[in-house]
Amino acid sequence: MRDRIIRAVAGILVLTGLVLGILVNSSWFFLTAFVGINLFQASLTKWCLLEDILKKYRIEN
Image 1 (cartoon, rainbow, N blue to C red):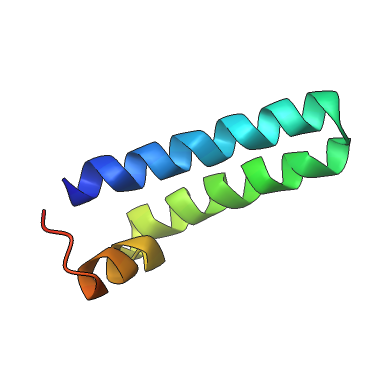
Image 2: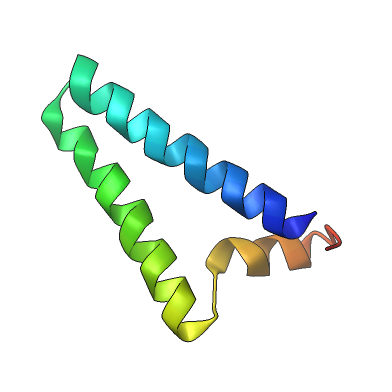
């Protein structure tokens, strides 16, 4: 469950950054880049802030 939430949030943020970057201001593409960098960092370090937040609120895996 936790993994699905993390993937959903990442996907929503990427799509939001893309849509806002196209329709509002190109600076929104930084949101997409930030999410991508965070996903890459999580794959290397096996640490994800959102996972820690979900654990704190006892959202089970």
